[in-house]
Length: 149
Image (cartoon, rainbow, N blue to C red; front, side, top):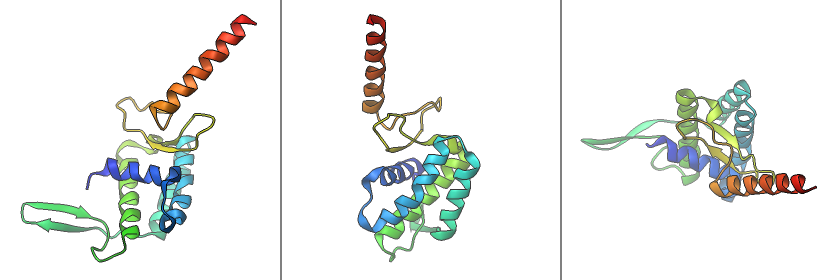
């Protein structure tokens, strides 16, 4: 299992991309991203632990000789269970390896999307280049108006 794509899928769920069967999980996961984005590591970790208790992850191994991989839900379980389990395991591994500060909510004033910061310098503040660019252009134009006034 590749953890970063699964963590990014979790951020997409929180950002409003959750199908109806995952809406409850996405709503419960959002406070983890918000706490991490606010720099409250203890609240982010406590929220993630609460979700792990509520939606237990059942790891296992699947594949064939020479091509084993980690699986985190029953092969016969519903697809929603697999997405929840993969998201939680990926976020748990990411928080343990890189820290909760790698999760956040977009800093653009008109955006509420969540993101996972996989950048080398851990300075991401926006969900996308589009939000970053739009916010920077707005700030630039505001400075230009101030200078002319």
